Image 1 (cartoon, protein in one colour):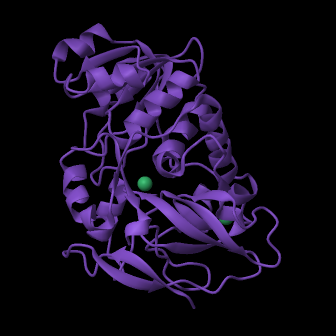
Image 2 (spheres, rainbow, N blue to C red):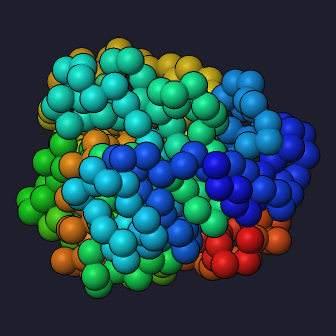
Image 3 (cartoon, protein in one colour):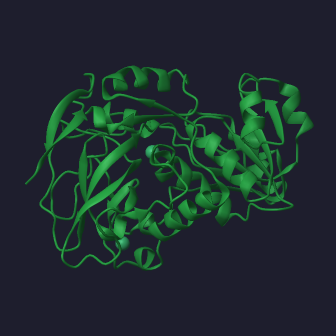
Length: 346
Ligand SMILES: [Zn+2]
Ligand SMILES: [Zn+2]
């Protein structure tokens, strides 16, 4: 078993530290990836700190992985040495349930295997992308097309697909009015993608602080939700609202912004239940929906779409010894719009 450099949390209450982790030997259908960049997702922080349940430590998070293939197993057909590849939020699934067969592995009925902190199908605990190398079965490795740099590609593997999937699934495109709630790591990708799909895009943010950015990223309109007048002015306006905020917000008042048959899709995951006023749904035949990342086929489609449209994430590249500081800045919403770790510094 190869031992590789990593940055991991020793416990839920300690800072991440430099360490080494074990990777499995490359099996017949495995790909060994030399990781070049790993994005920092808000989920990493929630997970290592135990907010979403107890974990096994040490835990190396990271599920926005971009790198180069350095070895392939004898039966691998989808990738070869030297390929530019990515790994997102999952590294395995049962591959035989109805959802897996439909290419929606993220909704595997037996539970998909998360890229870190999950029990893999061989019983080992997965370790994520804050490391120099990772071994992944070829089915869960996607190709990063030429035309997207690896550093700006990394966040596409979670933030990109998380927003691309509901936009596609709900028909964002020309003639559709799409609102994006929150302009953070997920929100800024939602704006870029919805704009590239041809939709009319509105950002709904707490304040107008990031208005200039929002318009530059492709938004047509920008409103502050701290201004009560916004909800009156925009009532009944949108075909689709993507809520990227993982804090509790008043969903019912956002539902009122939907037009007839409009849908509000939650991609953020607040720990507390979100109360919904049924009148906000029935008065306008509206829907309140959820969405979680995307399948492998759709993730590849998203990367191809991004390459075609020249889309990458807006990033700040950091060395590994700035990870803990970056966590504090993510929690303070002080990042425009994704931290990406240069894994050469591990
Ligand atoms: Zn994520
Ligand atoms: Zn399955």
